Image 1 (cartoon, rainbow over the protein chains, first blue to last red):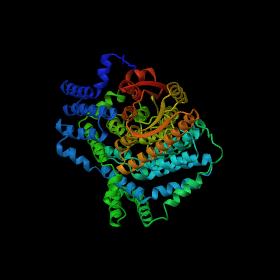
Image 2: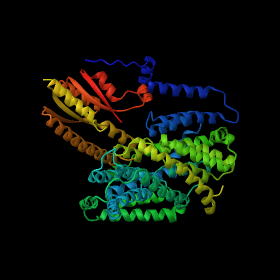
Image 3: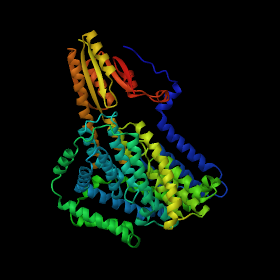
Image 4: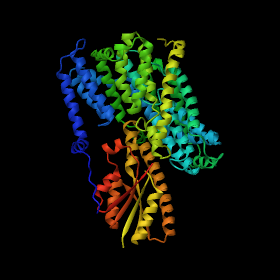
Length: 475
Length: 155
């Protein structure tokens, strides 16, 4: 028997084995150190403590040593414990409209998926428009984007993945080798990502950012106001994204193997449109209309939760079904992030951090917006986009007052780029599932994603500079 | 009779490894087992990402995992089929196996069960930096396997 000896140094082997406990010890030590140093000038004691808590959460969110929601629980514990906010103030922040809007939107999306309506729409559109090799790529790309306007981009990716996988198999594409396979799966991921930033419903990060904005500055952003401001970015990204994909991964299959048969078979399996599908579709449609036209008057959360109640009145879903579609950790994650953001703002720590970081050398609002959007884009490639919002929003709000920028613009500058993670599977679940298909490699995704990331930053800043002043968002 | 195990998995297969396994089996008059491991670690990773970062509920995550596992299983059958054809051409005794679970545990179990004399594994090429700071699962296998482990690298 051949024995292989690990010749790496002993210190390295011990370090690799003990990295997790050492990390927690390191966090505890840094936290203790931050609490023991004299409070810097211009910062209150509560502010110093808030920054120490913020840094602990920042490290945990970035490193994923514990689940994101559990890091939020830690923030909830530490904020009152170290005197940043009172216990009463802390828990009251869970009553934020954003938390309940997110909850309502996720339940509605769960109902749409459970009824089978979303799958039927997906199969119908792919079957109708996917009659050529490029047509199929366009259909998947746009379908993923459009569905992500109305439900979480992650849910859309999960729902469409098995269908795209079947298409790839039907076309006998070779995993990792076929350009067309890469095209299909990156189209799916990018469609979800780009579509996900178009409305409040594509992910929970925009409602979270708006929630922090409301708690810290008292301002808010309406459902339609957000979409109107962001839509040009979405259109540019869709056009650029499609062209980048078909150029980087030229179609390498003959025109066109039969996917229509496969898709229509799947559609037939679903049977006739059911009462549940009609009813859930109608409720979703009315809800979106209400968000657009009545959102400002009634509140987005009230509308979302009313629709949820209506779903149950008409017995369109059972509570058990909803439990299976909604991850309740989201409430903790978002509640915790809002608490931390508010703690930083109310203690003056956010303004102090803004002064010490970008605020120390940025000279114009334009530079601030460009830097914040760049930071959000870079961070979101490495960590969850929700964590990016939780980290950058308090600092951004602090900068808004220093530079006289409307906090609403700051919110856009963080919330939109935070959703545009194109490069890595670790950035967002849509990328992760594309890579898990083995049709796309990490290198393929990174190669195309870097170009898209740069394009996203340029497109966002051009839209902010040229288009936003026209709709009253000048800076 | 000697036993040789050729490991196949979703992370990569190599014609070079297959030809080496056939050559060795011929030389040693050994039985060749092709072991396809459906590594649940890969799907668990995606599942974790969905529940932790995507905040998607159990049902969509489970459906997604099932779709991935189904795909991997089909690929496994295809790979085993290809190997079987090649091995039959050489007139060797052949035993196809497909197992579901943790890669390392599955391979070690198979070695024990088959009383294997040699294991041939494939791993992806990694940068020197990565090699220095982390071991691949095939490195772990080399350490823990009670028999000779021959390794092939693929891009």
